Amino acid sequence: MLIEVKVPALSESVAEATLISWHKKQGETVERGENLIDIETDKVVLELPAPQSGTLAEIIKDDGATVTSEEIIARIDTAAQGEKPAAQETTEPAAKTTAAEAQEPIAEDEQADADQPSETAAEPPSSLPALMPAAKKAAAEHQLGAQEIETIHGSGRGGRITKEDILAYVKSRKETPTPQPAEAEAESDTSSRQPQGEPEPAATESERPEKRVPMTRLRMRIAERLVQSQSTAAILTTFNEVNMQAILDLRTRYKDAFEKEHGVKLGFTSFFVKAVVAALKKFPILNASVDGNDIIYHEYYDIGIAVASSRGLVVPILRDADQLTLAEIEKQIADMAKRAQEGKITIEELTGGTFSITNGGVFGSMLSTPIINPPQSAILGIHATKPRPVVEHGQIVIRPMNYLALSYDHRIIDGREAVLSLVAIKEALEYPASPLLGG
Image (cartoon, rainbow, N blue to C red; front, side, top):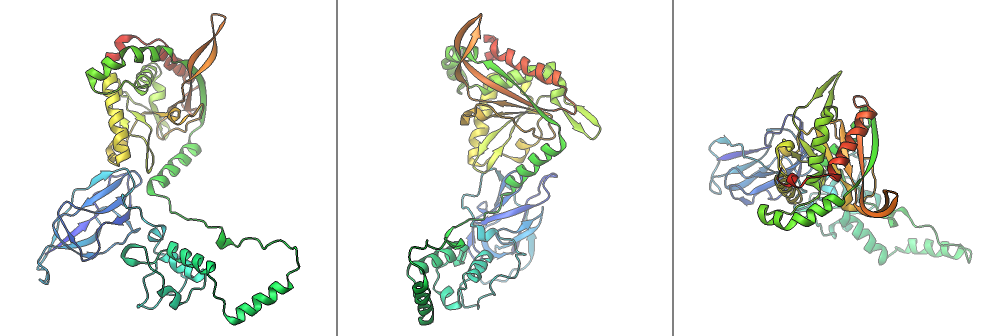
């Protein structure tokens, strides 16, 4: 019997997705629950497991195809080999979500659009190896004939020839040229007329390799949202510095007992989350968002924490951060960072948020102007803590200083609220109390 393999139901905010890489070929045996293909949305990558065991009878949509929710992309034959399917049964598999790139990266050729212009090389005879669209174009540019194409070993899926295969062949041909008599004569005649002492001709474009790689849906979504933020919000950034000595002293004093009791290390981010929540409670406008001509005041505190992953920056959300202890915050952050690297962040964990924190200091950043994550109205940028000379009570002393940057939407947040909220964050960090460790 034939089982239809469908794209899983996507969230309302996701209109379409892209098929990244089939892990099975048509005709191969599949096991129930085995990952068939990675499907990329603008937020996460979905692993689509096989709904039943059987043979992958038909692949309807190839790598790189754009698909929509519930669209049929393949069929699995669960009947014995050679037995005709009696009926069709539709089974909708449960998708497992991931946020990392597919384990088997796809070549740029295989992601080429199906509607690529037709001015590339003509289709080779059916006896020739299959060429990917970008490979056809490269073959035409380098004027490769059918006999030459037959000698090229394809490294793509199913033995298909990729653009890299074409370029590698062209390069090897240049290293061992075999010019025809007429070409050799022309070359000899040209070289004899070349004046002595003239510089060598400039390198041709083919000797300056370039690689064109389509953006992932996540990267396109990031680009879209950042441009949206810059074009729709009146972004302004205010700065302040914070003396981290009190936080460092607390961590030194309590870190061993904290880790022993809670099973997680005491980091810096949890202190910043607590300080941010304290400031947002004093200045609720920073926790608000714009909806048309209305301002929506959120009476909860869902804090987005920017986390680097192999696919790009993702911002999972700490829900109800005001109700979390330092230990709970540290555990959630550690878990999110780990799963971001493993590609297991879900769409739900990336949705929402009323305020964001981004820490460029882990990469060595001294100062930056973070961009607001719409529809939020503010974001805090944290930077590297470094020993710097400061003046205390008329004396120059060395203190571990961190520069803070608060970007905000000036349409609804005035400079007064922005500056005072950043001062509130600074004060919460410079004068923490030890009971904070449990709260």
